Length: 288
Ligand code: NAP
Image (cartoon, rainbow, N blue to C red):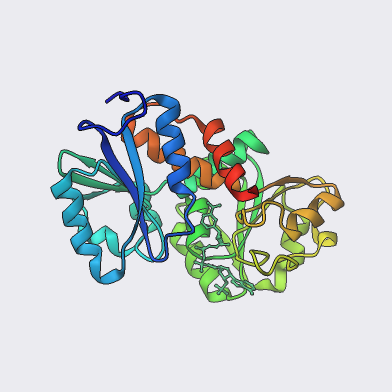
């Protein structure tokens, strides 16, 4: 469907994001810029959907023919029970962040992990095969990105987390065959950060308003490493500041947000996403 000179008309297709809360979301400005940029006749809205309204919302998607939906906190797990099909990526990760509606058949995908890896490869480390990777944190975001990192053939993946049990559960659920993911409490944080090629913070330590906090002191980092943080508020975390001062190459979380949206756009429209324009739009909103 092509645009009618940027106007909403009777052919405009509806897209959106659901969450609770949702008014902070930058997805509408990013996705509407993508539609304008590509000339696709679509409009993308933010819907505040509480848990008790989730089933009604999904019925509405079917009834109204909403073409695509992004799903954020707290619905990424429960939405899975309400869809017709779950793509393998979302099934293994155990969470859906993107729904594609094909003539009433709703399929759930997870683009967070692949979005992160695309960003890491394009912005910091084009080659992930053979790399020794340490992931700090073992929550939902860690699960998605580790699943996607494993597709790239790293030499080693280690998970270090405040709660050792959570790290161990995540490691054993994603280990397969002879590829064993190691797990530890923060006791081994220094050792596992010191001999890694890529260190990724997936915890919320350092996120606004706690912008002075860092999950790891800069002295513990290998100066030749790529140091990545999923947080994008602030764009440059205290962890990334410390890593840059140590001589590491740094990679922030904004690209993950852009590319999870880019993959969703591509699944919905079949067209390449205008990632540079999407980034420009979100950056302007974050800095404005
Ligand atoms: P989550 O499931 O709640 O997991 C939080 C993780 O952070 C857990 O490993 C937790 O450790 C750890 N943690 C929290 N507070 C800590 C503290 N004070 N000290 C040490 N560890 C602490 O959250 P999530 O969904 O994975 O999100 C994690 C981060 O990723 C957030 O900052 C989020 O903004 C970011 N994120 C970014 C994007 C993006 O597009 N760039 C997308 C998704 C998420 P325990 O297990 O010990 O509690």
